[in-house]
Length: 453
Image (cartoon, rainbow, N blue to C red):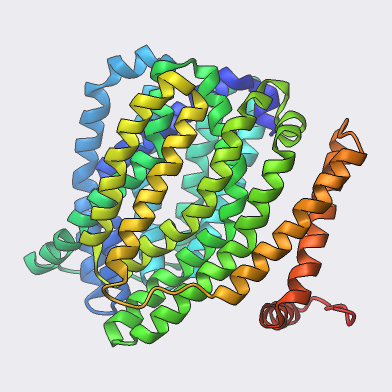
């Protein structure tokens, strides 16, 4: 929010394009071996050998990503990011250190360590970015903070990393290649979802439009907090359960993860549909309020993402990366075609609609393949209760907005707070199971639980 006010849509659009290019070239530098290394290390056999083989391959692929950046530097300059080419090369080098240490601890099952490293990455990144923007460095300051965060996160992971360098054989490389090939292709599809719309918006529209779209997309990320946490936590566990033949535990965990993800995604989407225009206006500035129509579509995208994230994660964890690629690869092609067709006609709304249709295609294909391996279930009772609570929240927020003009940020935040209270109370009263689980979790964390609840 501070960056949006301080640097404006154009400079933030340049930074968004940098992130898109970094994601693509870092994919080349990773080659899918990061996911393959996590999978093989998490299986508990030859962990040091797989870690060393991964480090060797990651270093070798850096050359390919650097060559790709240099070969396309003229195009990058034409997109208004000519000053970013040098920073992009630095970021790709630092990404090796960050990726190797993070994947190592994650593969060992130290989810808390890897997530703390990610948190430290974000904290350092934001602190450096705020200072740099305050000093007037603009987009370059945003990029510098991005790189500094990876350095901090990598150093933290390295401190706890228990894996050590060890001899590896051609068999270890072959096993990584076997898994990484499909992970690479699947990740390529995910990268397309994340950045194709940004790059094509930069081509067809202005850099300011890119900034508005990415701010709207980032705003909807609040709906994915629970999904990302569960996805990250469950991957190594499901991988081990699959290796041990405990597929019944996978089925139960997946269904529960969907419920807890919808627990946040649904109310965020409903509240965003009603208050999104005012939230963008007050939080990011008047220039970003134009993103409200795209925001409405992107909020629904994040609800669909609950199923996409968890189902593709589960396919990869049960050693089905090929099927995961079929889903993401098909959807990626659909995404590019829809972006090419809709962005020139509808601008940032067209990019949002293309993303929504793409995610629906991905979910349908992923579910088809996953259902061949395990039962894919939705907990109907809790899901209906979540929808009921979100509906009650929507009615209250609509009445609030009709009665009170949202003329300042405090009145808008009041609507958000009231909606959250109504949603929480209705849900806890409607679903005894969720009530008891949330109560137990709160009490385990040492927080008080009101007796009247």
